[in-house]
Image (cartoon, rainbow, N blue to C red; front, side):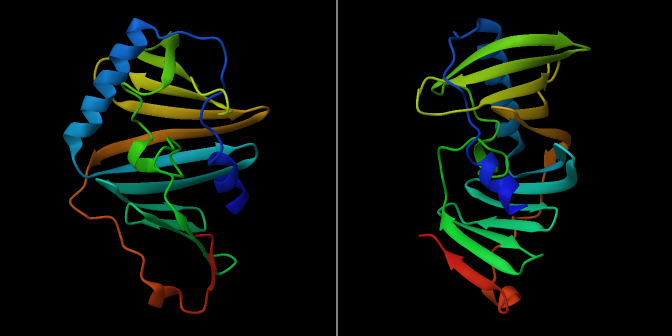
Length: 199
């Protein structure tokens, strides 16, 4: 799980030749509005990467978030990120990458592509859904993101991250308002875990 989270943190957008597509820009704007109107929200998702697959969820409240996926939990107060590996009883502490759009790295911005430094293009339409390819204007950033949106409502349906031959797929099973705040990191719950602080 740690390896998958590490690789996913690198997956943003490959600097390929592309241009903004008006349909894509409009859809991304509608998606941003859809998510923004939810306020605090929770996403249930299925994820697969090669032969590995798992189910998880995350809760978001402003810059705060909590992720539960496989044997891992991630807590963030908007500034510090606490990644808990329950299988190996380790806690990794690091600063939050506020620019990341990766669902497992910073879910508060994983649907936030409107008005950003990303080029966007609708590459597929199928059964009422549109898939948008996102590439970065920053030539130092590698990877591609394919975001699928339900056209009638602008609800996010799936995200695919690509880096060279690696593919990570996240299917959004549900997204809804949440009355439960994201859990906060409590060191006493992990008192026997090894703490690894990268700050």
